Amino acid sequence: MREVTPHVELVRYTPDAEAVVASAAKLCYAADTADILQQEPESASRFVARLKQMGHMSPIEHIVFTFYIEGVSRAMSHQLVRHRLASYSQRSQRYVDHDGFDYVVPPQLAGHTVQTLDGPMDAPEYFAETMEIIAARYSHLNDALGRSGEQSNEDARYVLPNACETKLFVTMNARELLHFLEQRLCRRAQWEIRQVADIMLRLVREVCPAVFSGAGPKCIGHGGCPEGKMGCGRHAEMLQLYTATTDERQAKTQCHD
Ligand SMILES: Cc1cc2nc3c(=O)[nH]c(=O)nc-3n(C[C@H](O)[C@H](O)[C@H](O)COP(=O)(O)OP(=O)(O)OC[C@H]3O[C@@H](n4cnc5c(N)ncnc54)[C@H](O)[C@@H]3O)c2cc1C
Image (cartoon, rainbow, N blue to C red; front, side, top):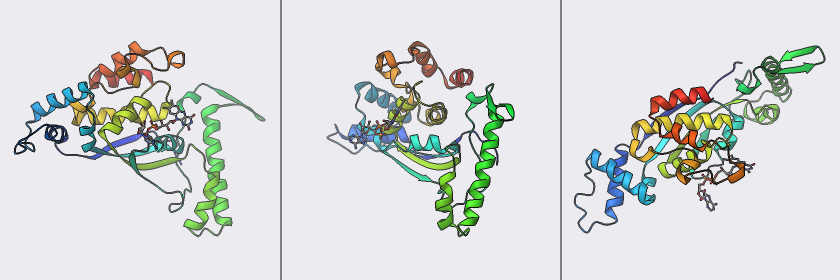
């Protein structure tokens, strides 16, 4: 068992993504379609930027991005899979036994103390001990159920915690990805999914800058937080963070989280 942190890889994405978007959009207006499939990268990027300005978003649905994500909790993945216009494959807790599972520890536990019957204990230590206890119970239950693989795993898993590590493949088209980023980079979103969203944005900006420039929490596109009093009050800071270059943003994000 060990504590893990998010690892996100951009496994595949549509080749010549911005040219694909430009071709698709230009087709809508072209009487002569002969040159539609040939788009110069630079003019394609400029065209994509214009499309976004105009809010003509359906052509960017033609490009897709597939991520491999590991080192995240079931608490995080439960939120991720609420995004319905994406495709998922997740490691099963039925087909794969979870003896000695890895887990995610909320960093906010650091510095806190739990009052136990035996006296005070550091919260992260208490958390790790709880994981060990759950893992032992999981294992005993799996034994009691006959350790028959899928059948015993499927019932023993009921004691597994939200912190339990999971691994997923996720594929989103660019429009859905922008929507996901708007929601999950918001300071009101939960810290772990925000961390994952931040890495995803960094990865796609490297390969598809015109589509993902200006991407960020929803306050960026709205010119302020649409949630009014519920907002975090940090619009200016978010604007600075998400319009910064990747390197600048990475440095600032590390300071924030
Ligand atoms: C800060 C935060 C707090 C949250 N708290 C809660 C909570 O307490 N409880 C809870 O249950 N959820 C909560 N959620 C999840 C939230 O309600 C959404 O389920 C999730 O964010 C997915 O958003 P979505 O439906 O817009 O996106 P997606 O499923 O990714 O869909 C993208 C867009 O496609 C369109 N669309 C998709 N499916 C349909 C459909 N069936 N009909 C019509 N249009 C559709 C919509 O325009 C939608 O915005 C929270 C999310 C955030 C970011």
